[in-house]
Image: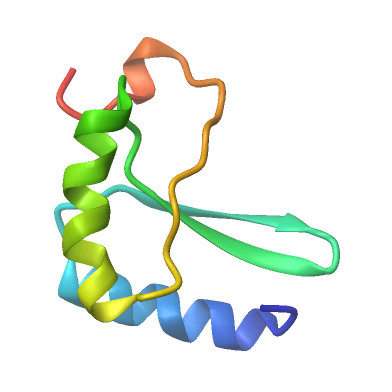
Length: 74
């Protein structure tokens, strides 16, 4: 979304529904994007994506450069 207040509202809602999932956001002008999880491989990310698609049908996997300490489960 291009609306920061909308992004923040969705972020609060997400954290209520999925408190165990790491969540952050980025601002890639003009869009605010929420990013959930941090996984070492596509299979692990797909498990979370399957759950998230029920509430967030437009969710999609992305690839990012992360340090090992940022990965879920390490």
